Image (cartoon, rainbow, N blue to C red):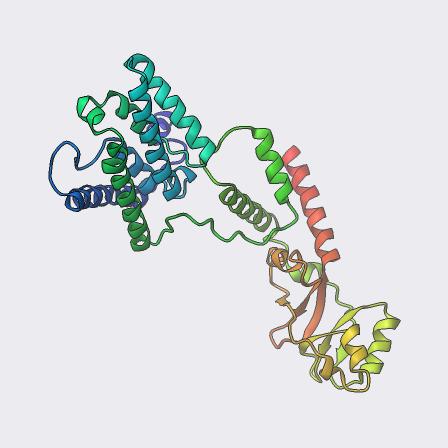
Length: 353
């Protein structure tokens, strides 16, 4: 029963709300394209049908998988129109239908791929231009403009409107990916895609965003039980906001530090001070050289929260504070790297067992 259920629904079952959105969008989109196309050109003769059959396949892509590169406006418009012109040309030059039909489809696919507008229904457009009968042949290249181009344009316009109504971007824009952690780089992704060697129905940017989200989720799962209070360094070198810049500079040199947190009289963290700013303000108080931007976390914060902070390249440490913002510890990139390494070693051992 389980295997039958999996066969019927597939490995990645679609949510009912997505099925409803795709079906309703296609219904309304095709109705809009057909009726407006008829209204725009007028009349009801063979040259102006409501819709051509391949537009139904285009609607599947535009409304059911609007994130697909094959469903983007460039692909819908370019793929259908280019294929129509190729199909009509082949039908004119090759009288044998048995030869013209596969030739038109093959040329259409190759041309769409070269032009970067691959659209599966384009193959059907090329085919119908060859086997569509005497009325399509009589229309000639006008058939590529109306109904093919008109239907394609109106369908993409309907897709854009439906996307705005349902809160989905069309044309698709890849979501902003989470900050990159320790894992793969853009070079790694490109190399993997080159080795894979197959054309995928998903953009590189979407793959990158998806993989980075998986990477982040895995890291959060792995490190959710490790808290900042367990890995922080409690012996923190800090500066007081009212000491002189010269004394603070000497203190940093003594401990071979380039920066240190600044605290007030109650040991509350109020910012960071660095050597360059202290050098400029050496005859003033540390407060004059204060950078108020500092990352603060609690002892109970999972270290997973530090991954995007300390891997961004903008900061090298996070201050651990209590409920009153009093400084109680610090976690550096080195601390985080060490605990990540230990956690991954444990994970690998557990997986091997």
